[in-house]
Length: 255
Image 1 (cartoon, rainbow, N blue to C red):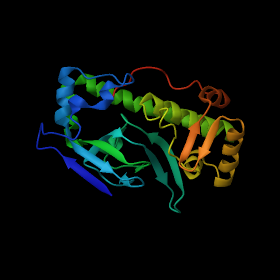
Image 2: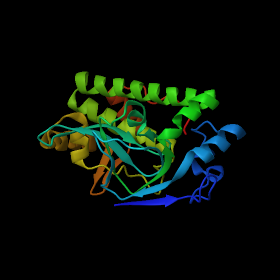
Image 3: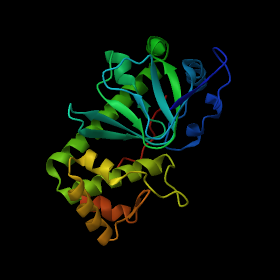
Image 4: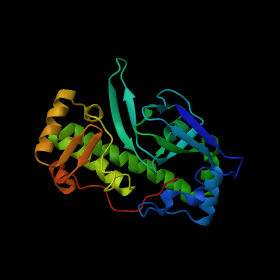
């Protein structure tokens, strides 16, 4: 299910050294200065490989770690007692997960791998040092939390006020834009790896209603639904249908 790759003590060699992190090369992310990079390299305690379909953070549990996604897709979700699932958001490279449990003591949601994942592992116990020694990184954590709140506001607006076809258009447009910013969707790899059940569990629709709505988008040639997921064919038209401005074009921090 999960395979941990550890370094050789502080400053040990990782499978992906922080100095060679592929995320630093992406224009979407703010790069570290030399002192920040040195701290993050020591803050990192290893890497974790997670298989597709595995849950690596579980609602109600305490985790000694927080994680940054290095590669792959995941989603955050909550469950009702009868097993019904609400997907809260989708997680992609550069996203931080587990911070809530790190600060509040226990997770109030779970995180599941949508594809094979590679995670950078950080010790929760070292968070105090980050706030004490690096104000810029502490600001970055605050920015990340504020950005997540802003995204959830838009998700809530979508579920509460958009029609079924508008909210479906919004969701697929949002995931597509977010994935393109971190180069997870390319000409050779254009498919968002979600099922119709994932879409239904995100939007609060029945599977039958979701299927009909996706067919309407496909009939308009806005998307193509495949066995392995969804390909967005007309991003701008999809966004206009959703009455959504899109994600801002700006550099963002990561840890």
